Picture 1 (tube, rainbow, N blue to C red):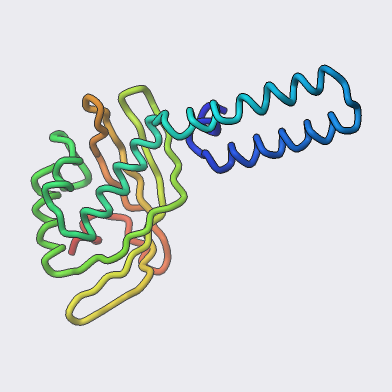
Picture 2: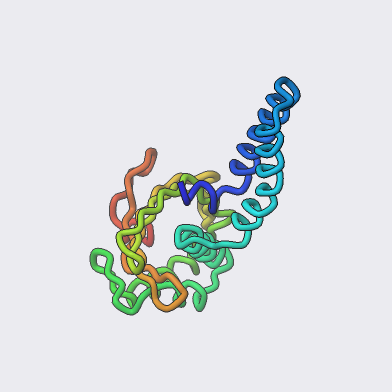
Length: 189
């Protein structure tokens, strides 16, 4: 329930608008003092709740923002930003942190990744310090020989909180047609 109130301002605004409309309709029908008071209470709470939703950032929102920042860095080929979000104890299959960053940099010199779009985030917090996110992504991939628009993928990333930032500790590719790649190394060839 807290995630609804703090993470999705548009759904909250619609819900509050519907509640206010129903209360106004009920008041116009009954003209009771209790409904009038409820109407004013909800009306006064709308800006407070919307402000809280906008200004309070939950851990899930920070994790999603980190994923989007890394995707934008991949689009720009910004290795320092990518490296800043990979934990020192990163491990994914045969890759540790240094091997991953080396392989990503090598892949980005051969392949151009454009317009990454991330969606359908499912964030689960195991503790205040550990989290996992599963999301879908699509992008345009270009090489000198090939260009593919809307290449779909699905990812599971584990995060650990380090101070106020979230860092990736593991990345796993989940199979999605048409490529059905299950190993991170296959994406980085």
